[in-house]
Length: 159
Image (cartoon, rainbow, N blue to C red; front, side, top):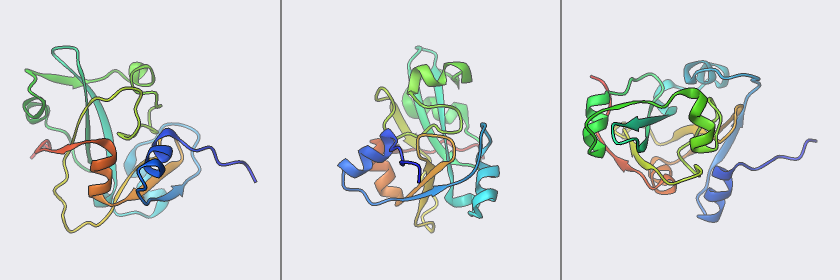
């Protein structure tokens, strides 16, 4: 068997004694969360995507929202005290976060960026997020994800 390489996110969860489950899937290139959820047979409302944005001030911000939702950039900007926000160009993602597109998670990025999660779906008792590389998802409790990512809840979803 191939030696499982632990991602930074997994090491941090273990260091914080946060329980998580791993799900792996076959995938060679970046795909979207909806496709991954379909591959794994997971309900969309339990799976989250990690968005990295740049503010007008050139600071970076991380947002974690359900895969079937869109971020409201106005609400997002307001939640972090910026005038405006735009998505970080994909080609800069790895340099900024240390993760690749499709494998980006809010836990254990290269640097600590302000991180807001949409939260909100209280009936859902698990969050499924990328585990730090393509083909790996981590399942953990919403409050554990929030703690591991040192995040805050904010109203950031486009309604």
